[in-house]
Image: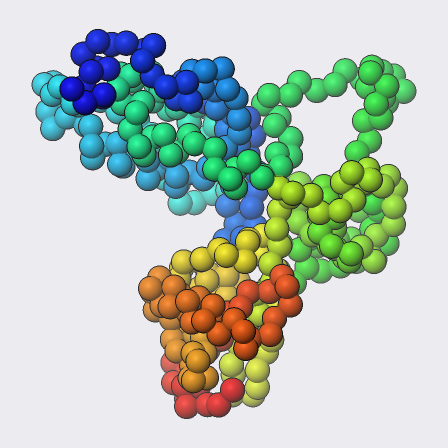
Length: 350
């Protein structure tokens, strides 16, 4: 008899493997400034064998899981469930308008309830491959360094002199802004003289990551002065710290070519969607009626129209890896932006 059927018939929780998740709670949210800006839910998972670990998921990961489980196990007639069916818990719906942080925060109680009910379904369903993969701690999850875990860590009690009762100073590593700075991408902070930035990590020799005015991003070290330095253990880029990569893009116009270097919090192996690239280029060049393109091995300009074109662009850039010279943190592929109505660019030379 297949294992899921046997477990269902015997209702035997003890037969479940020790690595099966039995509870999950959202510990925090983290903003990620990638090709598009979004929030990750930081989830603490506990297993039947007593294990505990963190995973990082977007709302769309919940949505995709829910659709898979609904298609596999929801009964056609809810009043007459079959032997291999059960009623799925309801998932909070998509929200298209509003502040992204506020939307993510408001979803936490609903998603916690969803996960509690999901993991409380019949034991045989806990062996579903899609469900196990959602709660599985990937290598990327293991390398990710959590920032706060606000909902798991109580605040340290304070004494009157501004120290924690255990003697630790409450003031985190921070720097004061000496000159105004305007970021060139969503990953970069806008700074005003006199601001105090709370440091998170060093990105490289010239750039730091920090938080100011409820915004997190990177900024040049030369614009700030030290108030309290980072601990030595955090002065270099740590394993699991956010990775920033550079995308070079060009705006092709009748009057010439504009060049931009866009910094995104993504791995160099990341494959964005067509919509993500188009949205980012509209934001970078402040133009809506644009097309995005790339140059192929023959140096011809190719218009990108769908996700498959993005995949082809990335594959071709990897095939040319040996002859393409790029800085270590720069994508091999580049984006060429043109006005949608301007077809003359497809006859131009590089």
